[in-house]
Image (cartoon, rainbow, N blue to C red; front, side):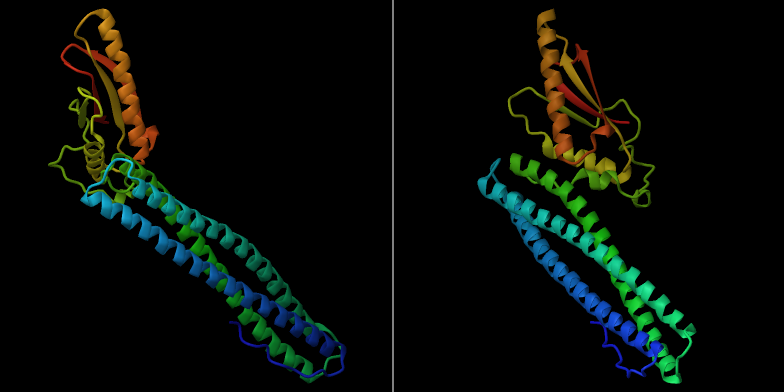
Length: 313
């Protein structure tokens, strides 16, 4: 809360009247700062409450997935919806912070004008010593007010940047979690958080060939039966690669069996492409940016059944 403005006495001069007017403006401005600071504290309390509720819902989902769950469990779906609602509230708080930052910036402009006007009052003729003494006190208090406003603006800027980064990261994690709920098995955080990690976090290990350019596929998914469960293995493999090479790209290849008649090969090719598109959607749900994935299709006589292969490039 800004300190109170030091009271003064009117000297009856024109400059004295100017001092009274400036002091009144300073009081009004400090009241605005106090109100704006209270608004910031309220927004922070709300954001904290929303964050607690969000992580409580996420924890409920993860704990159930860890011990095992059914695909599309209604309880987990409801918890996921709750988490999404709480995250949207945090996002709404960011809009409130931006609006508040605009108001504080307007107050900052007024404080600069008030400081300039106070300093200019020294040059007005007809003042007595008491007028200049009160102007000196007023100038000091305006300067302190400018510092308070700058500090409030900096806090708002830091909060906005931090919350924006947090919401973006958690939205990616929530998207990946929706796939885990859909499949009834735990995956992990969004792959986008790995994909855009800093180069400084790369663990260099020359003895490991994970992620190196190779004709050997990273993952082979054989669609030799209905409802093939591949998501967990796929996520784990890509996650290991991105830990070592955050900027790695991938080639997703639909491999159709070349065995049988020409008609059978054509049908197999179409099925293989649909399988690859399904895997591609899974990668998107896991948070992997699709611009990192190249999709292609081949026919192989060595393949006994339709496959989808993932290569690191």
